[in-house]
Length: 294
Ligand SMILES: Cc1cc2nc3c(=O)[nH]c(=O)nc-3n(C[C@H](O)[C@H](O)[C@H](O)COP(=O)(O)O)c2cc1C
Image (cartoon, rainbow, N blue to C red):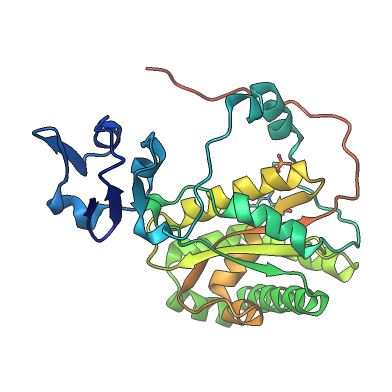
């Protein structure tokens, strides 16, 4: 016999009535020792699969993942120790020099398959998208378009008439932000003239984006990025967060158009990824922790 609704199927013959599912999720309850669904909760079920995870006899199936093989939770000994995690956290640094050596597609797939797929998302929406740019020509075009856009922005800002036009089109807070960032844009343009690629450090990139109506969009993309950065490090790759290029994807349509970024998507994070050139020997100290305890 099965108990079924639009989201889950329970094999009642296997169910031992241990109540683990009901303890884990208030969508389930027991009445006269019988497992029941709260039908008023059905539409709110986010298909997180905690009921599946906690069922000791594997009696619950999530319809959305019906065809997927369930993986067993690894043994505690197979998880990285706290000390090895500490080493990983401290070793990860933003790299700005990369070897001219493409990252094998399989390696990126391997990273995304776990780091991209298993990072948490608000309401379990699992709506984080990845655009990986490896093609040298496309990468070159991207950098050139970023430079064009920034050059135009600087020029417009330095022209009194142009600045006035911008002030009528954009909110004051945004104008103030651009004004603050202008000196660093000018420095970037100077470095570009001297042959340095400053937007993506002349390496491949992963753009992490989501539909614009996604809940917790920035948080989801940032968490995925964080997992990718750490996973990459374990495979001998280096990464760098690319805040500028993320902003360009969202502010300058021609930049997003080069990689066919969907119109109704927002780029939440961009990472440079490649084989780091420099070897780091030391971990500089960090400012003391700012923490309050109540
Ligand atoms: C949201 C965010 C955006 C960033 N954007 C850039 C960027 O556009 N270019 C760059 O070279 N570094 C960028 N960084 C890297 C920071 O400068 C770097 O994380 C910081 O200096 C600390 O160094 P670490 O990452 O090596 O620990 C960014 C970092 C974050 C978190």
